[in-house]
Amino acid sequence: MTPDPALRTALSCTIITKNEADRILRCLESVRGLVSEIIVIDSGSTDETLRICRDFGATCFHRDWEGYGQQKRFAESQASHDWILNLDADEWLTEATRAELFALLRAPIPDAIHGYEFRITQVYPGDDRPRPFADYHSYVRLYDRTRCRFPDSAVFDEVKVPSAHKGHIRAPIFHQSIRSIAHLVEKNIAYYKLQTGEVKKKSPLTLVRIGFEPMLVFFKYYIMKMHVTGGVYGFIVAITIAMLRTYRLAILYFPKERTR
Image 1: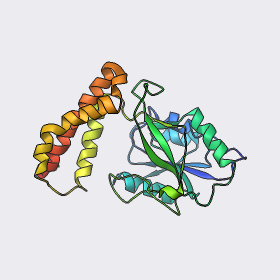
Image 2 (image 1 turned 90 degrees about the horizontal axis):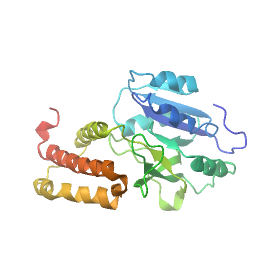
Image 3 (image 1 turned 180 degrees about the horizontal axis):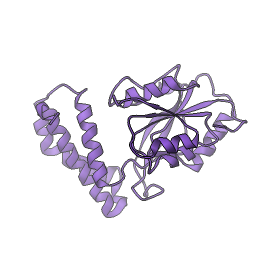
Image 4 (image 1 turned 30 degrees about the horizontal axis):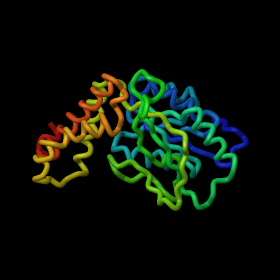
């Protein structure tokens, strides 16, 4: 990879993959000129993911899946540079984000800053930009691995940086987390089963939560997270997430069912 020679800080971009051939190139293209290398940790793709990544110039490693945190920590250990830009294969930098990062990296990063937080904004399948007032999460994705890292956790994959040492990138990262409603269901069920491996405690309140929590989840996603602006598709997304929450609570309450 050949970054812009005006950049003062060398970056490694880390990405974890499995069967992402339909969307990985968009992610790779979005970091062109910003990073010195791209490290891809693949957990067994059977499509063209690895060919696309290698053709782009990425360095690829195979590692059997253990969990989100474990995969990302392994990616950190393979990077040549301490400053890491972590992206998921279904994410990409917008042009505004690229411009902001180029401006940031043309000067030395202040020593007091350990990481930068981004708004990760959801994009519906088939769209190239978010719906009006789309929901987002804020995560540190550009960070110094000598000062902070991903946790050694299968499900909690968030870099924690104290507010005093955290910078903020105003422009967003776009995130197209699902390919379809069917993929939304499949992805969440797999995540919930993984999550129950770390959430051991069974609470008698779980049965009570099953009775009302899905309705609250629907309200949260449809109204508060503004899926109402997504039309019919937004309604289907919100009600599907609410039903999936019922499933999550059920497997927490009936642990013997987790492996079936």
